[in-house]
Image 1 (tube, rainbow, N blue to C red):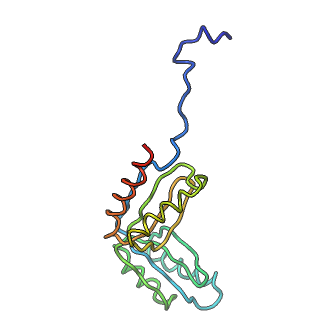
Image 2 (tube, rainbow, N blue to C red; image 1 turned 120 degrees about the horizontal axis):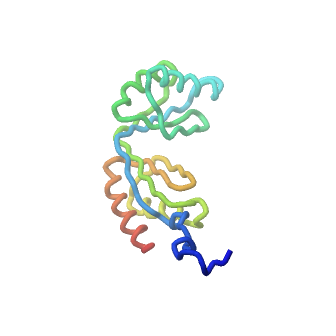
Image 3 (cartoon, rainbow, N blue to C red; image 1 turned 90 degrees about the vertical axis):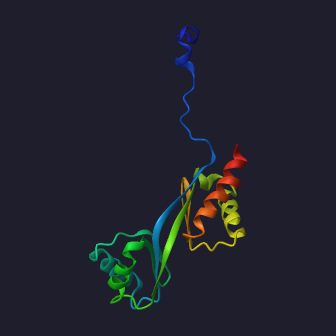
Length: 166
C-alpha cells in the first residue's frame, strides 16, 4: 500500500492517551469518617461482625481500610447516626467524624510519576490541613479532609498544580 495515496485524515495519529500530569481536582462532600479500634477477639471475625451490622442496617460504606486493631470507612453524613447505632453492640471503641470531604486529584498513571504524590501531599500539609486518610488508584489520589478545608484545598491545588503544567 502506498502511503502517498492515502487521504491525510487517514494518516494522522489518533490521540488515545491522556496527557500526563494532573488533569483536574475534584471535591466530593457529605461524608462522615468512622473509625473502629480495639475490636475484641479474633480481628478478622470482629471486622466481619462490624461490616455485617452495618450491612444489615442498610448502610453503604466507601473507602474501607483495615487497621491493625479494627477498620475505618466513610458513610454519608445522613447515615452517621445509623452507623453509630448499628455498630454499638459489636464495637465498643469507635469514633465518627462528620463533615468530611474527599479531595480527588486526577492524574494518569499517578503512581508512575516520580514524586508527584509526595508533591501533592506536601502542598496540602503546608496549608496546615489535617489529612484524615490518603489513598491512591492508578489515576488519582484521594484525601479525606474536613469539609471546611476542602474548598481552599481545591483552589490551591488547582492554582499551584494545574497552572504549573500549562
